[in-house]
Length: 67
Image (spheres, rainbow, N blue to C red):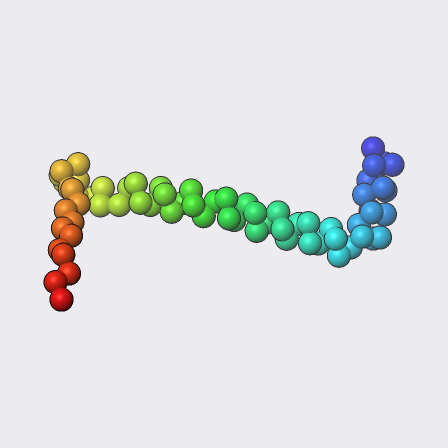
């Protein structure tokens, strides 16, 4: 176990920038993975605080453009 910790310390000293870039890129990747999950959860639970929220429907109408 002592050899493994010593080896990690040596690698961190020799390749400092690449280790920092790897940690930062993993943090960004987790954030990019987490953001759509939070957004879809928000979209699915939008307007759920109203009493008859299951009866809310979206009505859209396409009007032709007469010029």
